[in-house]
Length: 635
Image 1 (cartoon, rainbow, N blue to C red):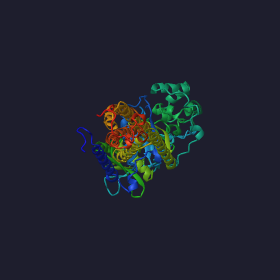
Image 2: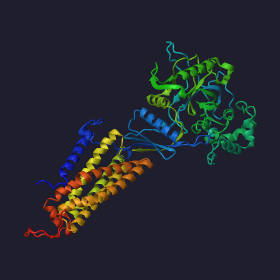
Image 3: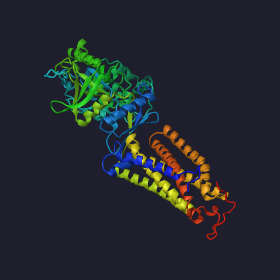
Image 4: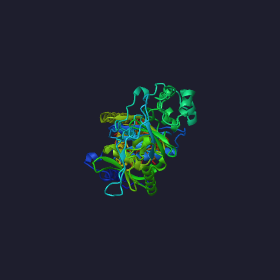
């Protein structure tokens, strides 16, 4: 018998649902990115809290002039950091902003040190004007031109006459973050015969950083002046060259308070004072906050292998570098090759020319190399990578040499290639989650989801009996849809399932259970009003549908708002909750209602004990089965 006109055909909805399943799992098994065995293709992309990995939080700090980071600068820094991480060969890292000053880097499945990706990587080429001892020893005579206080090197064109003369230096550099945790390049000690530092003279006092530091440079400088005292400040201000405390022993006592300053306080001292005061040591200078010597138009002071250098303004900057790559030189040593832009090449050539000729006798005798030529310091952030002596006018590309290995050379090249960060960062907590701990988290999350689903199913069969099978099948189909969507979304948009995402899916079980209760209770109401079960099903659906859609729409809107305004793990929770809610609506329309229409045509549906409709169904005599109750309404 053909169904009456206007009556739904449940087979069509079920066929559409079957088509969706076929398409979804074809994408799971055969879409782009699917590789390996069948089991491998069914694995969703898991977060580091489920499979282990590394999470690092970088906090943006106020610059020395007290200006906080802007949202635009923070987003630009996020993009640069993401490019740096991906440049390491890591394609699954997640780099997101958190709040108005934090950037969080998550690297699932791999434990590695990520702190160097947050270094500013501001490259400057500065001519070395003067050099003095930076150890903080009580007596430190000014080094003579023949002394080895400053490492020397060579920067002559290659014999082959190629366009890539090699800029090299005998100073051995390391690409590990400095002791101050600022990142960048720190020279390895022992590269020259510089007298070693005396720790007791160089170390700042424990109370040096206890006082709050004002925001503006002028206020900070006034606070430092009050701390060292008027006599010490006046003595330091009167110095025109590095102080010779052997000639005036009383001067050592006057300048001693500068040795108690913290690196943050040393950073606000005038440049000449940082260089001329012998109690301002390299131990303090190397630990200055990031961006302490950021201004390329001002002279700066930096250290290399225990020697303190007065550096000229930056004539060549990192923005003049077109490309940087880690390569092996002719001696099979790792170097960073620099390719300059057109304007950058002109500036580099001009800098090497004035350094080679020592134009205007700008370089002091203490700063000259072994052959009497000026040296150019390659400065990355606050640290000197190397300071080779310029032995020719360089008209081509150049190389930065140092004690690099493959990892450190590629790290430096990546930093230079993707540009300097517009914001300075301080690495906060770095969390390493082992694979074992991640696996236990995954098992706990799946167990919680399984228990939640089991409780819903048990209650459904206890209260609704036959209708409980509809709930059970709906939850299974919804779970299969969610799982397939997770796999596909992980490959296409990089969605990562975390513990928070599992929590969002568990919450969605409650939303699904609510829609069941609404539908089935409305069905009971229709039967109590005298309608037959077959006619009650479509009428109950029409009345319950609006409520179900409204409830799911509210949940979906909440998930969308939460996703927009939240960060980190909460965003994953919101995405998973919204995804599960949408797919639950698909199951409601394409499976739950059609299957209920089919059940309404069976004899078991008419039995109160089997269907779970209880007293809503009128008592029927198994023997009579002839006359219908005249009170029963047919739709």
